[in-house]
Picture 1 (cartoon, rainbow, N blue to C red):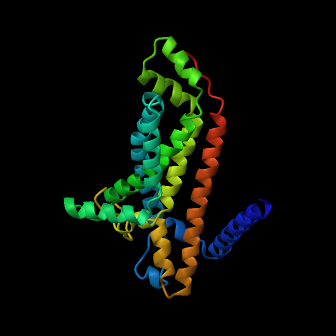
Picture 2: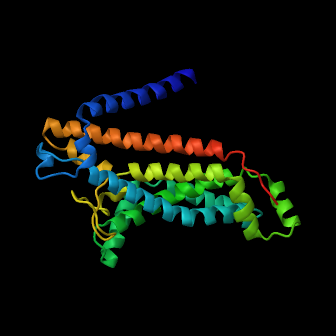
Length: 270
């Protein structure tokens, strides 16, 4: 166990050190505040502001959609279907199975739907595809948290005259608010860091999108395109982009832990 733990932390430390060491050398205010100019991928000026804002917009939109759909599903499993064990276990098995599907498959599925309905690569297509990708993650994360709510709370709620909907949204949700926040931010981190699911759906552009129907740049694809450049300076910028993405995910992780601790002792008032 000690050896396994050491290997995991060692690999993580090497990755973080490599990203920070190479990324800080190429980091500049220009990279963070400007969009790519002509010839950016051949060593010219500009930055990755389009990819930063595009990633935040895409991940935020996908997380909101997944949350709006995922929370009622998780509550339905743990409140309305609590006595139907076989059905609940089957639903959880299906969600785990869908969770394990590679994100590139979601990208291909989203692309086929786009072709069918005549939708072009755009921010909207990327949001819908990524929301499908993170939806099983969000549902199962919330489900595991809701399973820890004491059954006695449900019985107490029913004894006071509450129905199942009131018990689900007023009791279970409030009791699990810290875990729900963690699930939402975990899904956001997966959404902002995935490249395969947006490769065919969100497209890529050096400009900032003005609407949901325009292509959008993302940090993972920006890193890929910069590393594909034969210019060493551009490859160094790729590590700066990776550093930005790593810092964003790190902030999200710390933010989720902070909110989780803050709301961990949420009390139920009947």
